[in-house]
Image 1 (cartoon, rainbow, N blue to C red):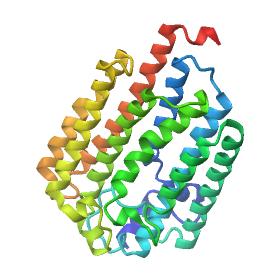
Image 2 (image 1 turned 120 degrees about the vertical axis):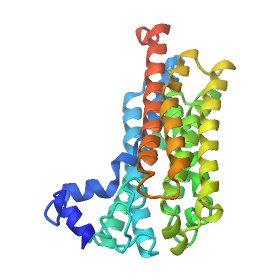
Image 3 (image 1 turned 180 degrees about the horizontal axis):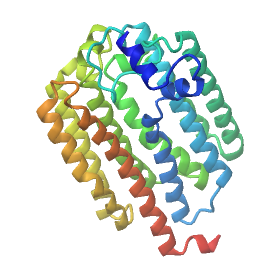
Image 4 (image 1 turned 120 degrees about the horizontal axis):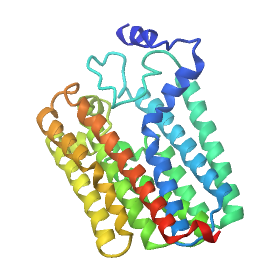
Length: 325
């Protein structure tokens, strides 16, 4: 009853269809999909490859829709496995599912149908890009959709087996990044791999910190992710290790000449990351008290991606790339 009343207070009821589905796709978690796509497209353009705007738009739309599907299917599976339940007393709004199932706003079959539609649309875009831009898109696309579908879906459900964090790191970094780069350049390169890896490793940290408040619910529902397996204290260590690795890759990629020095502006998010670590270390045992840490990590990921995109845009202008097209 408490959860339903909260939804009604926000104007979410059976008659507010758009608001319900917007809540269901959890758009605030979707930037990790389209940021590496935009970033690595810019890397290709800054390297002198002619912009393929239709291809760029299809990639960005495709990965965004795919993430919608992932979020909705994850909701359905967690609900059916009793990981997300209406009885949850303390709820950190930056973790867990969207709440549309536990609050009775949608039925599982409705949300599952929405996820299927998203995967069908993503697959259609992937098939078209494969036919017009090259077969590597098929390999990357199949891997990405496979991981999205079986992240929480039986019989594989690798997110329940301690492999979800690694899968998201790979997909929301190099897989999306290299796919977007290939559409523009028709080849692969080290630079987009390393730069997208920064965002992929940050995705690792974002997932880990979101698992900490859900520790009890995940274990009771059999969702044995890394935090559920190793405990909250070790989860803090995994979170910090991911942040350290992400910033280290960013710095080393520039210092070793794999990326332009202007990319170091991505370090602007470091104070927010330090703030998130400080809050988490103090409050990792309290779901609601660590909310600012979860929010700070979301901001870290988005800010780093946006600043790196801006850095490559400036770099392209300085090189006079746009004038050559």
